[in-house]
Length: 370
View 1: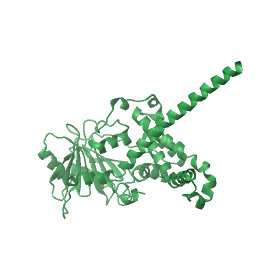
View 2: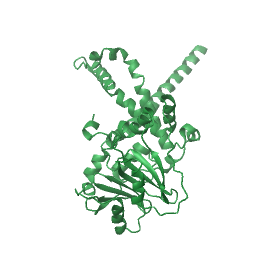
View 3: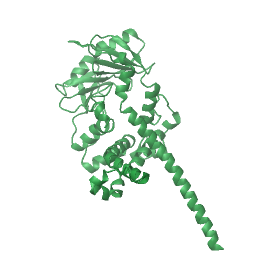
């Protein structure tokens, strides 16, 4: 009698475990599929935006293109109520964003100085996909924003997970699941990998099970390294402690990217700030300017240093590899916010991990298809 009761309890426990495994696996699998699919589409975000809005990216070839100041004047002469937050120069077009009143991006032809138009890049299907894949629906300026997902999760109290929201936690879980699927794979398929020729063979006529088994192994072996890279870099975005761990293991150095305000009383113009920044990296090109405001009394000047890689060469709105802070009240007070990587470890984590390894923006669309 007792044995029969234990058997019934054992069957109930087993059934509960099977059901929980099935549904947890289904939910987690769907999460990975949704995040991965949206990311696969966003790989071509630059090309899609240009194809959908070609008039915004119209660029006129000119011997003497207009500068950042003229581009800002072109926007503010048309919309005097707009307070600009930043401006970027990419492929002959200035993209300017406002700090208040609107989420639109303003496009100015650098060849003519004329305003091509304005567009809210955070709206529509692409904006929704960006909010899903990059933010976990926590970016307020993009379609699909869900305020409750922007709230800090309990792990946010731990320093390694500082500021982790519920949306970011979901993205981190998706990255962890991907890693848990990829990391054991070499051990499971070790015999097949040792005999690579057999591992890459698909038995098309040996029955459905054998064919599907071989296809699973073949696709897994081919995709193992990219999936591992995407999982690790995706996890790095959400868990800042992972970068600190990488530095401690590989000898990297934590950079201080904060600007210490001075006590000057000048009114530094955009041109003077650009010149001060370029002096730090001779021969470089200014590609992005962050304007000072009530919270930050300095310009942030991003530059493309030809001595370093252009890892966002195929982004639609940005490229740069160095960043300099210039005091808005003292052009002599300059601080390098992002310089040349101090170690190979820093180069991997700070430069290659995001724009090149995760987004693929260092190469054109044909290479990203691979």
